Structures are given as C-alpha cells and as structure tokens.
Image (cartoon, rainbow, N blue to C red; front, side, top):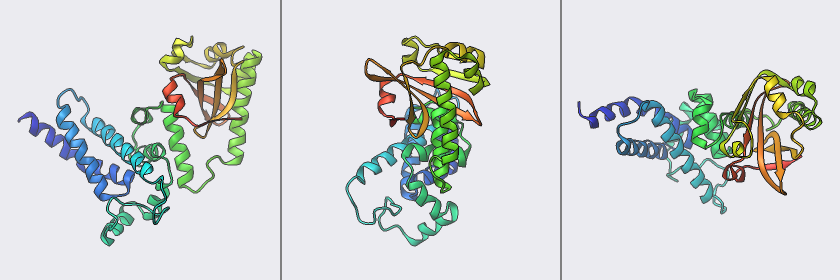
Amino acid sequence: MSEKNFWAERFEAERGRLGAVAYRMLGSRAEAEDAVQEAWLRLQRAGEGIDNPAGWLTTVVGRICLDMLRARGKRREDPIDGEGEMQHADPAARADEQAALADSVGLALLVVLERLTPAERLAFVLHDMFDVPFEEIGRIVDRSPVAARQLASRARRRVQGLPETPSADYERRKGVVAAFLAASRDGDFSGLLAVLDPEVVFHADADAVRLGSLAEINGAHAVATSFKGKATAAKLARIDGALGLAVILGGQLRVVVLMELEGDRIVEIESIADPARIAAMDVVYL
C-alpha cells in the first residue's frame, strides 16, 4: 500500500467523527466540511511522523474550528441584520439543513453554543460531547489542563442556563481561595493544609520557573511548605471568570495562579508567568 493510500484510509476512518466535531463547533454543515477538508490537506503535507492519527486530526480540526470561530467573531464586530441569531456560512441555508441540525444537535443547543467564547465552545464540545481529555484540549487552546477544565465548566453552566458563577458556590470558592492567600501571607502552615487536598499538585510554566518557582510540587505538605510565608504580592482575582491569584511585581501583573477546587479543597494549582498568555486573560481584582 502506498503512503498516500495509507493516510487516505486513516483519514476516511475518522472523517465521520471529525465532521461531527466540526459541525457542533461551527453550527454549519458547509463550514464543517471546509474544516475537515483543510485537515485532510494538512495531513497530506504532514505525512509520516504522526503516531496517533485520530488524536492528531482531532487537534487539527479543533484548531481550524477555533480559528474560524474567532474570525467569525471579528466579522460580527459591526452590527449585522439578524444579530443574535445563529449564523451560517451560507445565508440562504436550506430548510433541510436546519432540520438536520435540529435532529443531530438541537437548534436550541446550537444557539446557546453561539453565545460562548470560541475557547469555551471548543472545550465544551470536545470534552462533554467527544470525551477528549483536558490535556489535549489545553494544547489546542494554548492553555493548561486546569484552565481548559475551567473553560468547559463555565461553558457547561451557561449551556445549562445557570449563572456563570452560582452565588453560593462562588462565595464558597472565593472563601477557600481567600483563606489560602491569607494563610500563605501569614505563614500559617496549618491554615494552608486545611484548604489543600492531600494529593494536590502544583505546576509552573517555564517563565514562572525562571522567576524562581519549582516546575512541579506534589502533595499538601510540600505545597504548603512552598507557599508558607509567600504571596505577599498576590491579590485575590477573577481570572477568565475563575477565582485565583494575581501577583503584582514592580507595579505590573507578572504571575497568575489558577486553582482547581473540589468541594472545599484545592486539588490543583498552576502558576503562569508567560506574558503572552497573561495578556490574553481577563483579570479582575477582587
């Protein structure tokens, strides 16, 4: 079998699933077909060296759809007729396409998905509909698994018609993060242990490591030791809609700390100092 035929067979085996992913991402059959076709062209150019064709193709289609959604958002900056309604690549979308959408996804869901940011939509569709791990989703949207999980969680609440931050849950989480910050500043080791899950994991990106952080720390005692007496320059903040810490150094936001909670315990912490990633975040000081 020639190499071309080999990759063609692999692609055809995944075409249906890729089309479903793109369809739910974009809400348009025509755009979904364009995204899948672009993925095929990229596969032809990439050729050998792909160990996991299914995963590679899912990542590529996800990135293509993300770019298409972002471009669509830019086109909509100016008011257009029918603003707020679901848009299609073909303005004269046929009635049978509308019916197909209703059958396969549900127009109501697609309309709600249109209200999500591109990254939220991708995280929700890939994880909740296709069981793609957050590690892979994070690579597509250039964020950590923790941030990808938060994107999907926020999108899920919006799809379900719940407030983005349910008041009771928001206040509880805010209290946990505020307690962590206070304990860190005060050097309260017991206070840190009280809000950390025994198996908590800490990760830092390369820029945070250059600022003096360890790349990874495992376990509540080790994490508490690392944070004890620290965080004097940190402020409680809402980062991309989720609670965390913002570290101000020299009058500038230099580090953001994302936290993943389960119940009243922090299970994962990520320190990000990459200026480009921070610049793309919506940070509100509390």
